[in-house]
Image (cartoon, rainbow, N blue to C red; front, top):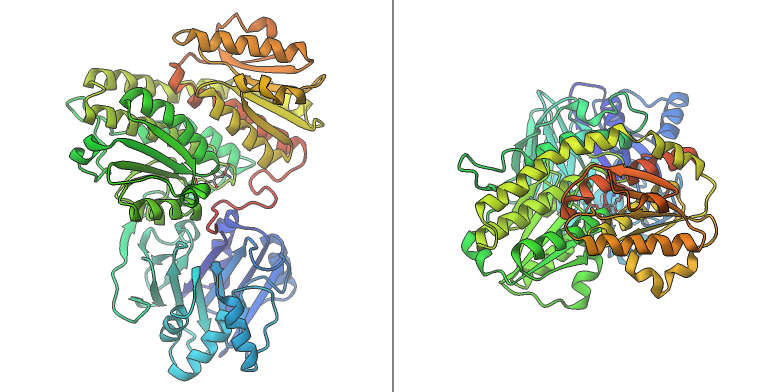
Length: 615
Ligand code: M6R
């Protein structure tokens, strides 16, 4: 979590840094702060709460103009979200300022050591020790980049650091271990940020820093070394989206824009996946087909919404390839000593590509000899970089904390991987793959149809603003959809919401149902697996008999459910396996509208951050 920005160049550093922080506020919004080098010194300001509070402070007490600066927007780990704990942190002489993303695990020892040497530390954070250590190292080596290398060698944990020193007024230094840090290369200027969104308005040429690297930014260029000072390679890349993709584009919230973008995002993720011979080709998959043919187990690791996508992928992978597949919470995975070997394919699903739990799970899998394929939305992020193969989703930047278009595109990517595995292993023939791809190709239009009919869902949501609890039920792939509906409602509306496998209800949770309680039921298509459909129709009757107010999401024309639906939300007909792509959309709209009706912050729900870069 936390957003970091650094700038050196000809523009006002404060303006560039603040604009960057605005774009990174999704990463954390507990506090924000900036430091600029000006008039031979260093000036810093920081404020608890959102960036708006920092703006206010700066309007009342402007900082001197300078061309080198750093900034931070925080998701608190060590220490309460208050002014003192906000970044930047300074040394006692006020010559060094540092911002940090991650956790320094040995900060207690370092702090004790510094205190013994007479340093006065003011905050409860782990970060502040870095400012003091940098000041000490700088006074002996006289160079900020070298001081940073010396300090990094002493730190344990995951950290991204960006620092400035008043004695080097035209330098910004950054260091990366685990958490992301990208460099933007401009003309006579350079940028550092947790995410390219921070500098996309100025340049689309970027460099992705590798693990354990230090970068020195000057107006005329950048130098990258490892922590020992050896010249290091960092990967240059071009950002293929522009600043408008990171704007709200006329919508009240990023989430609304991102929900509306789903038809395009789904289509883009499918684009170019079929070659001229009609065969499925995934050119970013660098694991040889010979290895994929030998795979005897697939394990999907992910968190939150991406985990729900992985749960759905399990159904597709097992159905289309007949390879056993497990989906696991990345945060639990490595701690239970999973059985993995070179014939295991681990699929790590992550929008941000920097979720620490997922990263640690994939590292563990690779240590055990498994191959790892990442499904990711963020080019250049850590998870794809550390995987054996990557399939990028093309959702474009997702800014709202609640994941929407990333989920749909993760599903599409999972289906593609499942089909690819089936094709390579011969359990799916070319014409079957093409038939599914044809069905997938229609999904974008079907999502558009769903989006065009959402007003009754919004109205229903507004009417439920005073409810305490909403339950969600589904079967088969509808079960993860129910979980996703409940997660959206929890994180956005702060309501008690739970998703259940409908068949499990009778084994306990039905006791929760009381008169008037809204229960959302995702009904599978009536064709194909009709047993599944019939069973859920019985489940709807069971909860209705106990007073539930049923909100039924069912295929258009499915008359069997109509008598039991207090509210019917119709979705276009799809094959059962693909239904989550259309059934999830009303749940996203429902949660967004409920959040608005309850006066909550849609894009930045309380206590959350977009990417969770700590375990
Ligand atoms: O970036 P990732 O896909 O790895 O993030 C995983 C979860 O943190 C994320 O999906 C989270 O659950 C969302 N806020 C849900 O809307």
